[in-house]
Image 1 (tube, rainbow, N blue to C red):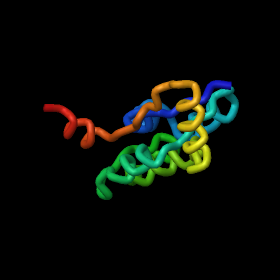
Image 2 (spheres, one colour):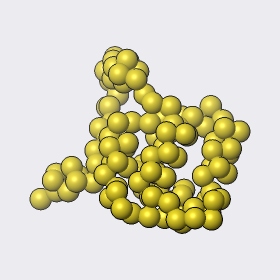
Image 3 (cartoon, rainbow, N blue to C red):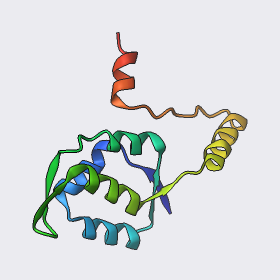
Image 4 (cartoon, helix red, strand yellow):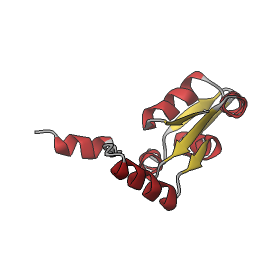
Length: 112
C-alpha cells in the first residue's frame, strides 16, 4: 500500500483533467491511501469563493472552491494529531528529518 500526500495544485489538476466520480472510483480501487493535512485543506479553502469551474460529469458550472474541497474530503484520510505526533516521535528516534509542509505564501516569505 502506497501512502501519499498530494500537493494543493494536484487537486486542481485532477478536477481539470478528470471527472470527480472517476477519480474517486480510481482511488478506491487502487492501493493508494491519500492523506489529508490541515495546511493543504486551508490552502484549498483560500480559493476565492466566486471562482467557477466546468463540471463535466454534471455538464454545469460549479463553484471551484466547493468542488476542490469536496474532492479533497472524498479522497483523503485525515492525519489525526496523534498520528502526526507519532510520526514525529518515530522520526526523532530514527534520526530522520521531519518534513515541514508549508504553503506558497509561507514559502515566499522564506525567500530573500
